[in-house]
Amino acid sequence: MDFKFSPEDEAFRQECRSWLEHNIPHDWRDDEELHDPDTREEFERRRAWHRQLYDDGWMCIHWPQEYGGRGASLIQQVIYNQELDRAKAPPTVNFQGIARVGPTLMQWGTPEQKQRYIPRIPPAEEIWCQGLSEPDHGSDLAAVETRAVDRGDHFLVNGSKVWTSNAHRADFTTLLCRTDPDAPKHKGLSYLLVDMKSPGITVRPLVQMTGESGFNQVFFDDVQVPLANLVGEKNRGWMVAMTNMMFERTIHGGRTDMMVEVRQLTELAKKVDRGGHPAWQDSYVRQRLAGFACEAAALKYTSFRQLTSQLKGLPPGPEGSMMKLGTSGLNLRMQDFAMELLGPYSQLEYQASGAIDRGKWSHRMLAARRGTIAAGTNEIQHNIIGERVLGLPKG
Image (tube, rainbow, N blue to C red; front, side, top):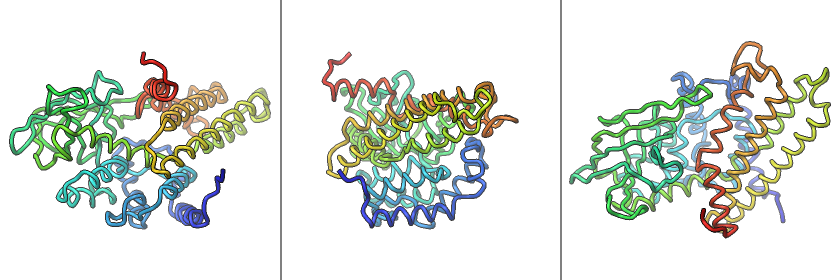
């Protein structure tokens, strides 16, 4: 088994790494993630970074060249993601559009839809969110109650979506809605493109325990959506939605290098005091960190298994659920251990005066729980592994 990348891919890595080293904003290097993402100022700051990536050919690299991408291979997409993680690059502002909406429209969109929407996604001229999850239905994506009634030249939409990331900034949303209420659960669904400025749309922020409100609940009250905004066939939107989710899995391949977090936690252990000496000198602390490093390495090679399957053209396997469980669980345990290392300093809030590393560890600890819920709860992932891999009966 050969884990080395080809000379061509390593050259691509060095090109990407060099560009990031010369272009990541210096104020971001100083503060890492210590910026309030809810402010308009920070959003525009990230949009400017997004545009810089785009202008220099480092945005949508996995897209075909005919749509403005570089036509990068899956291996190169993984390398690109690894280098973004390694450099702790600032976030961009149109993830949903790039990872899901654009590729989905390439496959399912009409020529008019492709021409109208796709070119504005890479430069972040139009921001996208997605309307999938609904209140009271957890991770059951097909339990759609939002209704879209065909009125001839438009759909009339009523309902609500929840956990909608960036809805408060978005210009458009995709919307999975029910167009045939008498059809079975996964049937009778349609996939629409909706202008977020349409009359009848209300966006309400959901404040997290970090104090941030990037998630939202979106209400649709007699919202008119042109019939031309239907993607794919009416009542067959589940197929389009599954295409959307498949693209998400592909772009996420190899994105999380947990060793980056392990190294940062190690630096914290060398910085804080434990019994009158740096915590790093304590064998218990080093043992815990070594355990985290072993888990991070195991996740890395599990991601390579997932990558190998994709390179062979195979559909996503159980590795996706294993990666989601492994990364979210490891991250949660590492942030808990950071609180243990900080001792009484762990009580200082994010960016509080006197907080070690400006309180980023307390912020990460509070944020870590959402990773066990997002993209399908860990309970759902356990069920997938139990039923589809281990062959256990459904509970």
